[in-house]
Length: 138
Image (cartoon, rainbow, N blue to C red):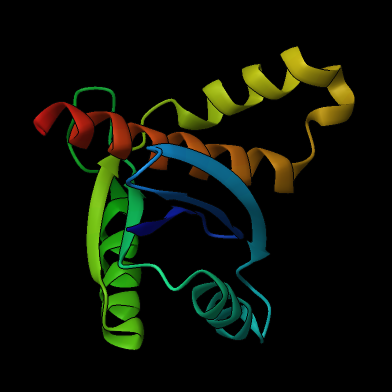
């Protein structure tokens, strides 16, 4: 089963993809969320990969409580569920951006710290967390 991972942000949406056979997430890219064709670009990704599920990172405070952005993420998830007729699952995304920056820096130094690469890597970490959690359940 193909799964899309999303890292929702006020300016950018990080996108990743993976499958439940390999349980490996891969970065796809980033979409500028303020653009007029935001959903056109997301629609194209959904058509290209034909996922059975979308996993979205849920921003939480350090103590595990929801933060103001959590409501917007839930709203976005509901839009995706309606628009694509797909189930939506949420994964705790605490520290994913920090982890993504550290990984990218280790791979290529400051040159790798491009915003779109960070967003895609964050989405990859979110989806990989989902695979790791769900592969343990099997």
